Image 1 (cartoon, helix red, strand yellow):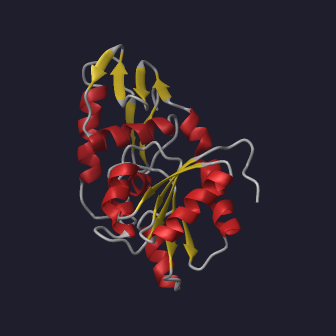
Image 2 (cartoon, helix red, strand yellow; image 1 turned 45 degrees about the vertical axis):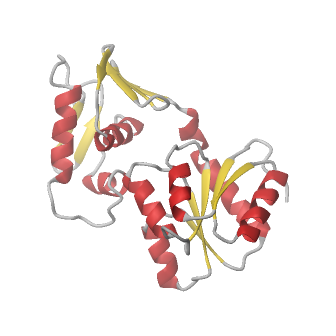
Length: 234
């Protein structure tokens, strides 16, 4: 199977079976992509955290740190790199657990390489538009995704990691109403409502940093609906 000519991806394979990992690395390279290897969960997590990969291929059963824990940690830290989970565990409950942990796709062993490649390239195509946009701007508020630097009116704003992820998500959806459920799922990776004021607290902190010292507010509360980031009144 030939690689998509318009898409060359950097893939991280986190797989403890060295023969399988080396086969995947060789095959992905022959298909036109680059591939790095990690043979345990801790090493894989460390490599994945730099955010330079287009797709992660993660085995569930890994030494030192299991695959689902790797994915959960990445999502909790705001890393949105698409993940294809590989596993010999193929029951419905197993697939559901993998997807709810933050996986984007799930492939059961044994598998055909042609199918794995098709799934990896599909995940890569899904994120290309977002990856090409490295800067978001709303009014005089600017978020640079490459440097993780946020400024407003040229003034540097220091954000904590969760505040940065919250702002990044709001800026990705600038002008739209973002619901609490959307924030819980995409910023906190919760697939349930923890019944806490965690969102209100972080929105309040973010608003104090990006709006308090400026004449025009950008972060607005939409009563009964959620929040919106826009340059102008709601």
